[in-house]
Image 1 (spheres, each protein chain N blue to C red):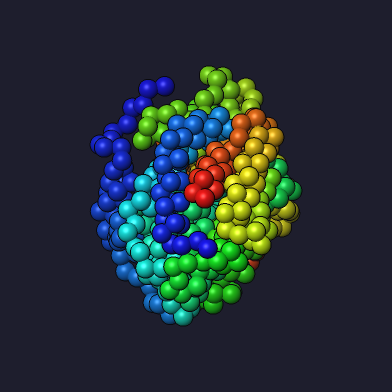
Image 2 (image 1 turned 135 degrees about the vertical axis):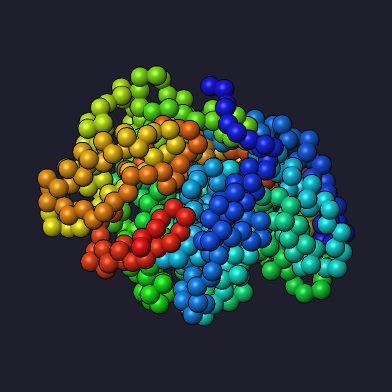
Length: 333
Length: 204
């Protein structure tokens, strides 16, 4: 697979894409300290700040979710690579406040390590931070050790919920509690049909035979194991929504949000077809779905496939989902 | 006694041995399912540390190593070594340029404790901790026999610990996605850590 991408010097991709994103959405976000995306207009420092970190190459995640009612800052690393601890510590220092900071870390080795080191250093400097680790990928199993579960696109609806709570002026402990409750009630499964190339070195990530797909593929093309011949949209949706329902524990009468997150080369047309079936199966079980999302939120270059994210919502989560949001890629008016 | 001058020479010597095995570390990394860049990462780290000229005392020298490493190199290798050196700096007494055997043990214990906050990996997880944990324990246990004996014990334990990673299944980093296929090769991070302890021991 030859790499066909519009690029300049590959070592400058992260810098250039962040410059582009902040130029395009200059009314919402700006770039500081090279790799930290913050709101164009910061919120009052009397409120809890929400910060997250992650590699680039997954646009619009994570920086596209900085804005009112969402993140206060995203700390970018490099392509598929976590930022170092010093850069994250810089961001924590920028948002040091009496109200405190919630740091959202996706469960990947590099992100966890940088976060652990930065949290330790922040603690020594008297910065008040509580960490929420997302680990909602169920491809390796539902009841396994959470440390073995990767953080996929589920971080994004989590940003929405805790971002809205922070905007309302809730305390650090309240936000942490409702965030962790949300975190434990969400689950993600990914499916891939084609691999992709690493934009810096052209290396091929995750090769799949022409007529096969794989359920459980990670966001760097890590193998998840569930390979099969390509199924129809309905069969795929059914095969994915069942374990997601089991993992979230969603049942008749519960509210839930369903997200189909395209990872790069799957069309919205396909996503809508899949969404229709999955939402239908939830309705059949008596689950009440709130308005969801079919879009590209967290991508993996030109990989074809999607992540299906199911979030069981408590009544307070339902209200927080309706609150105003104004980030480049999640807006509620 | 371990003088600061001696310790600096040990760090430089470790850098020389690490550079000599750069390709080997990258090959080990690729063989066990990592992204094949450990040689580059560890050499980058030592190249950065070679620039440190701080001569004041153990505490300041180790802190300067930490800062330079973190500012000039990225990736998990730098984060881990940054934590290790930071922990040693925190454990070092103020304004001291000579450490006796118990103080050397305290230094390495501090380093291990701090790196333990950054990674949850422990013995058996097929990471650099498989070399560092037994090396630190052996080094501390030999404190009664003097500084040279401590580093000799540390080097032996690090080599043994690294060798034991052959039979392990990776649980951290990208290699973990290979599962059973990660069994066989020695873990690259443990191999470079063992090289460092071996270089340290050769200084006596």
